[in-house]
Image (cartoon, rainbow, N blue to C red; front, side, top):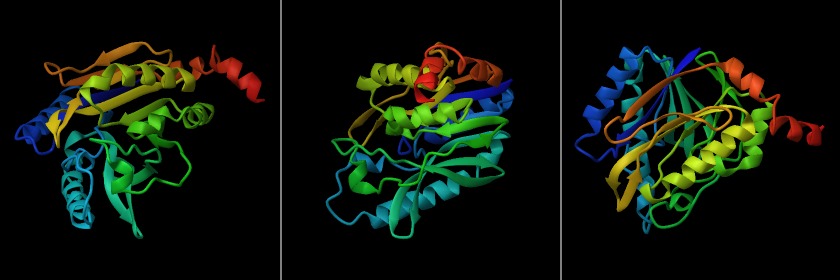
Length: 260
């Protein structure tokens, strides 16, 4: 069994952020968490809330530096930690999924980018071009889906066929779309035959009302845990053998036969 923690954290500009982060560390320690899932780019303001009209290099570089400083604190969890961070590769600004276990390494670049009010992401940074590759984390085979990547069903199906036990979905989503995201999470977890763990921002920032609601779902879409404003952290034991077994059952087996 692997113990997984999800959360909802205030926007980084909120005075409550640092206390909430410390409380999350305490929760993970007291629950002996093996893996903690953070929201998308949690350690800077939500830059994509503002449509860029000038050069964004300075703001992006400030966000990169802020994440670098906060990532140095992740050892406090005494657990593996996943999330996403702003980064620069060559001349490309990218949103990179990361895995921290004593050191931080990139494991994925967000590929599917919205570009609309509150979420001007394609205007802020580039889409990842690299393939979606599983990685090993806390004894699990894990597939990363940074926010909108969740909706790419062909990528999710490929993760399932690669045998992932868990999909992690760090996200920043609005309150008004929470039920849509929960429905999508259920569907994609079922498609992969994998657990799914997602964390989100809460509160407000840059004229966006964030939805909170982190969740952990089973391989057949069952809700195992969900956070709310009174319970911003949730921890569940997951069994990789259950995910392995799920991949041999409907609808995964029917899809496998069609793809042979």
